[in-house]
Image (cartoon, rainbow, N blue to C red; front, side, top):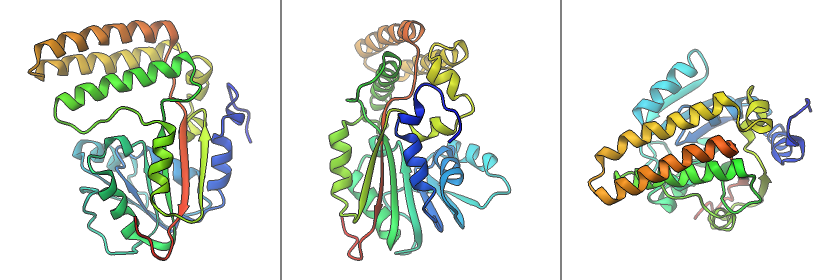
Length: 270
C-alpha cells in the first residue's frame, strides 16, 4: 500500500480496497450515480469488470457523468430507482453510495436493486454515519449536511439527516444477504483514492477546501428565498453564517462511513 496521510492506512478504507480487489464485478448497475464518483471508485478498486450502467433522476448530474465517462464502458440513464427499467437478474453487481438518506421509499428502492441482481451477485452499499468518533472537522461536515437537508426538505426534496450506524446496519440486515460483510472506516473509500487527500485529511483547514465549502453554503443561502416560511429563512440564514465560521475554525473533512458487501441469496427477497 502506498504511503497514506493522517492514519488512513488504519482508517478501514485500505481494508475495503483490498476486499474489493478480490471481486470481479461483471455487469454493474450503480443506483443514484450522480456525477459518477462511485463508478470511478469501483473502476479503480475492483479486480475487474465488464461494464457499468449508472442511473439517476437528476438530468444535471447525469450530464456531468456523461462528460466524465466519455469513451468508457459506462451507459447512463435518467431513471427512478423505485421502478428500475431492467429485467430480473440482469446484473452481476449492484451498488449505491451515499444515497440511502436521499430515498423517499427506501424499501422499494432496495427491493428493486435486489430484483435486478443475479442470485449469487454482490450488492455494495456505502453510507456515512453521524455517531462515530469524529474529529471536529468531520463534525463540521455532518452539521453542514444536516443544514443542507433542512433546506432541501423545505423545498420539497427528499433529504434526510445522516443515519446512525445502527440504522444503516439494520437496513442492510433486512436485505437477507448471505454472506454479508460490513466494514467501518474513519474516512470514505474515495478519500483513499483522491489526489487531494493530503490536503483534506492532514489539513482540513486548507484554504482551497474551506473556500469551496463556504461557496456551497452561499449557494444554499441563495435558495432560502424560495422558502415560504419567513421564520425558517431567518433561522437557516443564521445557521449558515455560523457554519461558515465553524468551517474557518475547525475545517471540514468527510465523516466515517459503513461499507457493506453482501451476496444475494437464491431467494433474494427483502
